[in-house]
Length: 134
Image (cartoon, rainbow, N blue to C red; front, side, top):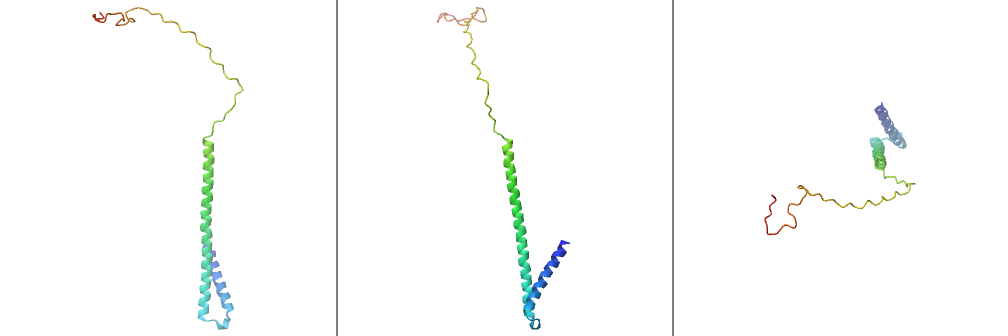
């Protein structure tokens, strides 16, 4: 249905332009050259109008895509800000904890002499003597 209205509109514009140009020339003196000139001017007018409409449509689509991409980028940035928030610092109303008291002094180790604890080579062993465990 739209195509039919578009075709009728184009034909109407062509007929009006042709009629206007032929009316400027006296109807008695119309020649084939005047008719051809009027038809060529009418189609030129229609071509310019179609070019303007196509340019508006193309620029409108590009503008729409640009606005949509800008909104998508703004939404992505907003999502990034919410996805990784910075930690919130809260000052404490409590006093700082006290240091732990010093530990007890170390207890001297008690040395137990048995077969499992004694050294294999005592320090007082002779340097040149036999060094056998058994």
